[in-house]
Image (tube, rainbow, N blue to C red; front, side):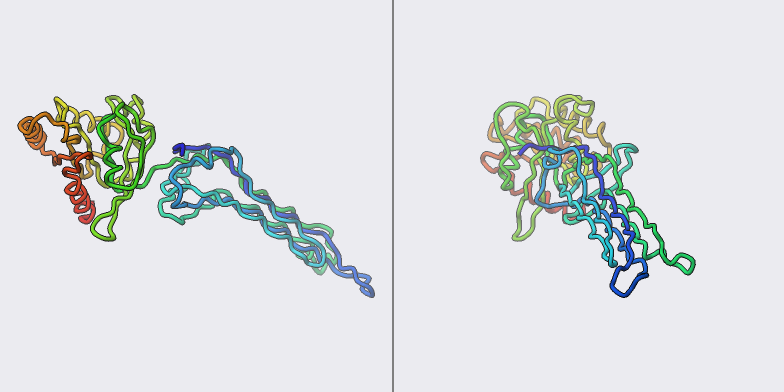
Length: 331
């Protein structure tokens, strides 16, 4: 499925139906009073967070969305039917902006959350409402109100508790495929991951957490280099970051600092979250002494370090336990 995390659409709520001008017409009642019914309310346009969606792809196929108009009132006090609401499902984590003012209108985080983005017009009142002592036969009724119309922009920020970040080809997709049921594309070349992947990691019986694998970051990602800037916003909601660095790197400390520089340039708050440095691909490390030296170099900088291999499974249980402990402590 193609990953779409931003769309702009125009929404138009339904117009209210017009009130009716009508008079009672029955045999032996030559001067029946007004009996015009009211128009129906126009349909609303409602956004609802659907837990089965992970992308805004469905909304990208169409530019304009319109709800049904309310029906006009009729004689004999018959009110018009209300227009049907138009419900547009969006993924949890969708942020809704008014395109003209750039004002945020809603942030739909929890599944089932709803937001009326355009309200339908009121139905007009029929002439029966306008009868008075001085006007026994009113020949006017209200027109239905116009439904709201606006252009909106919807941006998706994925909701995950843990974000995996690292350089291209550092093993992020392989890791998420080992920890969860997610099956991202995996290959031995940079930028295999072109969109974030979400996986649910289950542990300790019925407990679980959501983990997200981000496309690889490179130096300058926060300024638009590579693919990183397109997807950095998807780690803004994460509570914990796992920074993957290949254990074969000649300068793991430098790699970590480059990653942190890009994260901090995008949003300094990201660097205040619990972070673990995971030295990946330990099955490819040339020797224990070199690995120990790299671990010591990172620990001297006060980094928490784990050594993992998604191929052999080394350190994966410990990694999951570290994440679980941090989440339970309210990270």
